[in-house]
Image (tube, rainbow, N blue to C red; front, side, top):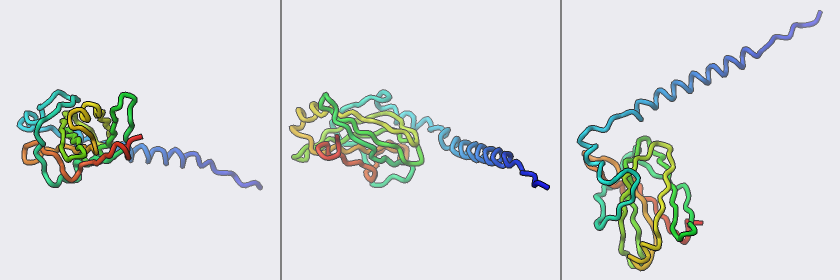
Length: 175
């Protein structure tokens, strides 16, 4: 007598069902963190420049020595563009939305130029900042490095996270 072969396709279906349930649970757990509302007081502080624009500043931003794991920038890549500019891509690898960023352009003599970028960056999002190297070379005489730091709301005020500055040396890091 021949043995009956059992059909095990129902196991594959069960496995797929379990994966779908796990995926739904993970998405629902992340949704409350992303849907948090910013209190009105903090919204007023955040509206310094138009969304997504680079605004040159004369003075250094207010910094906080250390931001928590909610606000984390990670270097992704840097490209030299045909225009002479550089495009620096950073990823928000923290646990919360980054409110904006400051770009520090540092000359060989130590002088610094500043630009503020008012644009929210969601968790996992890659943001590319195009830096006009010719403008900064004309203004500062040279560009040795570029630092980009995220902003976080600390005690109701937007401040730059000094511990999260990404240091880019265009001659070395940009292709």
